[in-house]
Length: 445
Image (tube, rainbow, N blue to C red; front, side, top):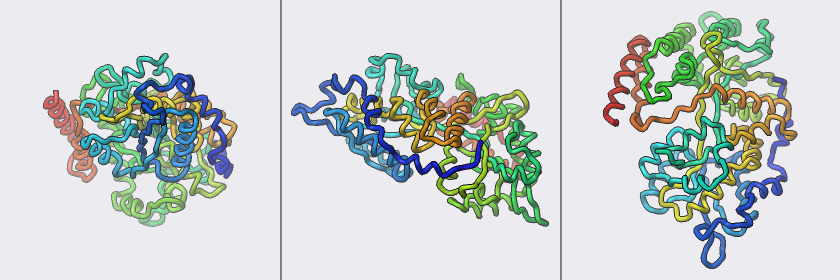
């Protein structure tokens, strides 16, 4: 954890074509089969949709696609950017019309829903021909792509939630900048030390748990990494640990006051107006990819550290939550074999490493992330981010939506919102949510 340097500018995409061509492996010589090649010998054209429309991610994916297209003479990939709010609704419409894209970036937590609804293509016949494909990926990511023991996607990237903290603010109030809070109790102590109050107003808030993280993350952090459902699919909403988590959140709200929290949020902005960068907030829980925002917007001498989410209590574990994205072939795509070859390329070690180098995403390919920890094109700070990400994945929970409870989150969130308004206690909120979700599961079994 060191002071930032602007050497991140060197991360713009550089030569790497030879390395990327190697990622195609033997299929460049052997071809992709009759389904991947036109009768006249021309390249088969496939369309790839994602929401990477600007910045380093778009630069990276466009160069990766160009390298793929020039690396072989059978498949030509056309990149189509779709805005974040439109991509999935447009995908559903295209599937219904019988004219879907060939490859699309999709949410990692809803693979089973799309498979069951026949919105994605079963890839098992292609994966079964591979030599231990699953060993490429982090195990908890690989598990998300299956529906009825068949794979319907390949993992692409993921994330994890951590603490970013202002080291200069720590030093200012006498806290050790190299020793971030380890438990919830320490987090409260640090926040109180960092708070700056002027009369009835707050000039600086040390920490507030619901800025950028949901109550669900703190609930699983308290409950040994168990989210609203356990690994067997049982509803585990109303547990003593989760009740404690919500009571803890209410204590934070009561301490600062709902009006203070709402007024602070009204001032939050992007860029230099970001509350962590501007100094309004000293500790911020956030996706680790938030680092890219600091690279682009924080002053050169902005001095920050990154740490795991604190433990609920000593020894309970630094449990965190992660999401991410997968690559899928939408149902009805004309050239699934060619699509799969391109997906293999995108998840190969060399290509994942290149995308991660320019995005600071946590890539699904384990070896790629390991390589990035000591990558020569990253400064010490960038390497530190990848080291933290790789370590934090050991205690990061992915929460696929159960097939029996597709709309459960609205039921849970509604009860918690009602609790935050003071209309019921945490125990009452979780008891009601437990009953509602159990009823939902019963209806869908």
